[in-house]
Image (tube, rainbow, N blue to C red; front, side, top):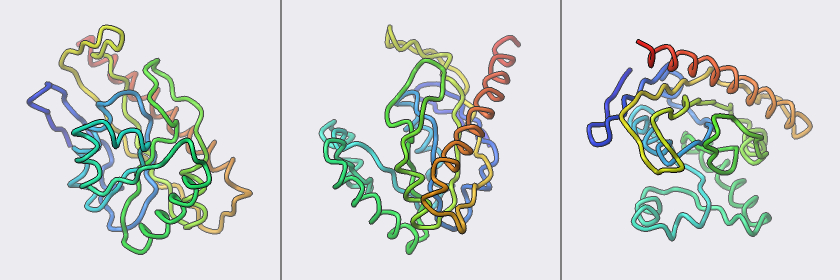
Length: 204
C-alpha cells in the first residue's frame, strides 16, 4: 500500500503489511534514522491495531510530543538506570502478551543518519525470548531527500518493508546473540535491497 503525507510530501510505500496486521503480539524492531521514522509508525498505526513503543525517558520532556506520547501509552525507559529499565521492559513484555499488543523498539538505541544499520542493543531480544514472542522486523529505506546537516528536506519516497516474523519459540537467553544477529542480518539485506530500488526510482 502507498500513502502520501500531504503536509511534508513524503510518499510512504509499505510492503508485506499483512504480517503486522495479524491480531497477535510481536516485538517489532526497526532501524532508526530520523524523526521521520515516527511518521512511518503513525502511518502503520491503523494497520497494527494495538501497539505501543519504548522510548527514552528524555523524550517525555520534549513537549508537546512528550505529552502526546504519554497519553498514547508509550513506555518511557530511563537510560541512566539500567536495572529499572530492565524491570520496566520485562513487565512490558508480559503485559503485551496478555493484551495481544505489539511492542515497537528501535534496537540501535538512537538515530543514525549515515545510511547504515548499526549494532543492536539486546533489550528487545531479551523481552522476546523471556515472553516467547516473535520478532517482527520493519526496515525503512534511507531518507535521501533529507539533509541532516542543513536540517532541510524535499519531497521523496520511503519504502517500509515488513519482514516475516522470526520465531522465539523454545529459545532461551543462550540463543539471544544468535537471534539478534539473525534479525540484524536480515534487516541489513532488506535495507540494501530497498535502497537499490529507491536509487533506481530516483533516476527515472
